[in-house]
Length: 250
Image 1: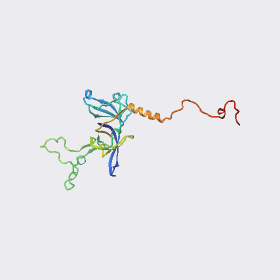
Image 2: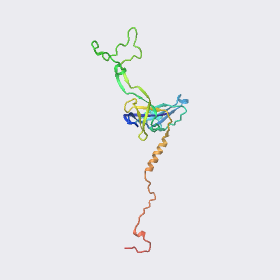
Image 3: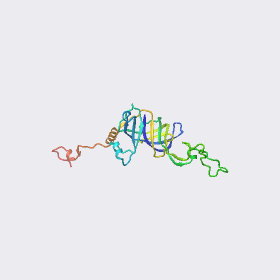
Image 4: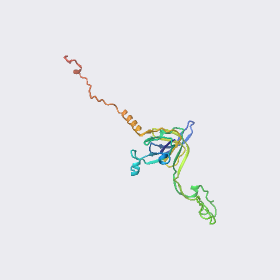
């Protein structure tokens, strides 16, 4: 399977082949690094832990866990099959996804604070007529003495939002591997800057962190012009060009 951790940027629009407007969500996907590989024999299940973002300080236990890697701001797990092989230190970038992939995005929905039953559960409220003073948005009766205590799960006012939400069957519209941005058709849960987990089916091609560092170093070395290390200075003068024993012309 394919998976990556990203950050929700904003919603915008794209145009398809027929000129229709398609609402999309831009996600800064990766780059991520595999920080831990869990196996069924050792941990009881097969999973891959990804590190994303950065932070200034780490606790000592977390610093030991990320020994040899950078200080990641978030660590997220993805369940994988026992036959899939991954290694610690491999990089996961936005290029693992392609246009047309079907994915699911998991994130924390926006927090709405403490809300009443009309906004939280869609109650219609009471009619605005005589005898309903201050009862327009009230929940109404919640039970009786004969019933006993309030039944568990009764829809009432309370905290709304800030829940783990998963949206499935989303389509990848555009992939910018250089900038690490994925355009997903439709809306994804969470506010701008929120953390999202993207997963889908397909083969994921990874590369190690050492290979990526070597590639960057090769590109940097190729951009530098080679210097002349011989130190020889070529200069032409009238005296050097003339043969020995000849009188220089005036």
